Image (tube, rainbow, N blue to C red):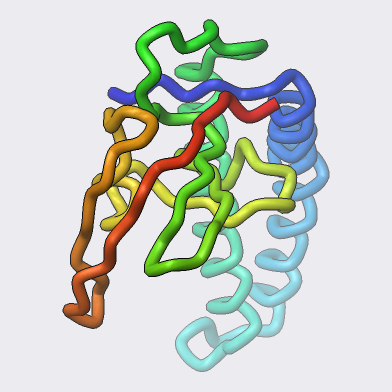
Length: 157
């Protein structure tokens, strides 16, 4: 499993979301289900089915948040002495001739100011574990081969 580094701010934000979903969120969706159930025939009750779908999505998000927080390292990641791109790093690269900054990792660790690419995405997989200055390429989902030159990488703060 890939180590996920979370800043204290990101961890606090995710814990707050989890608390809201487990408390008031669950109560709210349960009330919606009960109100829809009271209307009668469940087979043709759109409100009931919508509330059950909402409940399922909320429970999945709760599981996702718990797993992420249980497996996360909170704080500052160690300084990278090996000079390679890793998860939780902001990468500056020249992609198809244009300079671009992006984060390798999970959208959960970003405050929304950067594009985020998973380590499993074509771009993420191409740059992961590469050294600064490396020139690599990857195949985009549309089949186009795209060249990438890694200019810099530093841990996201």
